[in-house]
Image 1 (cartoon, helix red, strand yellow):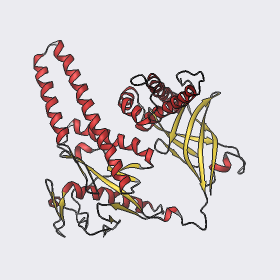
Image 2 (cartoon, rainbow, N blue to C red):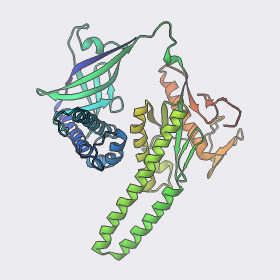
Image 3 (tube, helix red, strand yellow):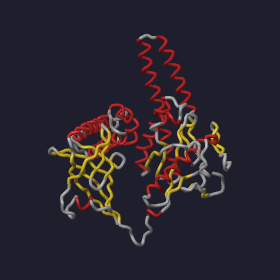
Image 4 (tube, rainbow, N blue to C red):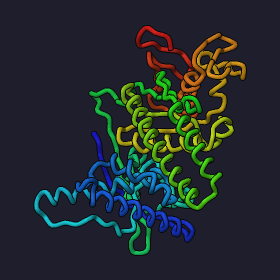
Length: 405
């Protein structure tokens, strides 16, 4: 049985936190109102009520125009789309309505942009993460203290709202009590999809699916040639054309990255995966020294696209420390620089051979499993999804059909 409650929690916000929250909310409203304007006036004369279409059209622009995280930009767009949908329904019923406008000081947070604790919350803002203590009634049975202090109630998402000089979280909470006659869904095996990023193959999944970077690299070189030729001219017109070339370059790459992101999510859903694991991109230039700035930009954009698109399907995207994932054998875990030679991986200990990027993708999935195991968070066992079968945390291959992993 499931119980849902909304806990209205007052926050303790020092001056610095208050300023960060105010600017964050202003930029969130900018995203929502920009999306509302675009969706209401529509495409080819029609109102836009598709979240995916609005995100494709506006996400990159709003990421550039604001300092918000990818998740908050996405939430601002989606808030506008939902409001436009409601307006369209009223129009269909013959009711008077107008373009939605967002003036209330509020923003939407979920567990990607907020970390909910029992006595405080950590929120993403334009100035990084801030922590705000809860101001709760003393009585343990008095809401919202009753729900916040109950470990069985799980925070799902929250609306941050400013009113009467104070900040409040309207937190959606859920408590699930297992049905004694039904098997606990948490006891079922779950699987993750490991994804390796690279210069020759933009992405390689642990299921063995490859997304070649040939097209990306071809157009990267072509645009570099065009910019170089224009820079030699040195005229004002040439500089204006350089900017135009840059816009075309980004536009082409973004279409390609959206396609790869969609296909990665489809791959996850096809294999019943609920977590897509990427390598941490913080030091990507050190890990992939041959990567250009366009590659680094593409890796980060791809992760952001997968992160916000996957949420609609109940899939999460996470990052793990990528150290040694390219040098470690996914079969016996022997780690040595000699294991990898270009695109070829051959373990010097157990002689396992495969494509180096594919081996790395399996290690990235295994890295997440080991991190989860070390955290001792309990829950269901998790395996890395392969094309045929799975890998468990010990690197043991469990086939689901005949074939080599």
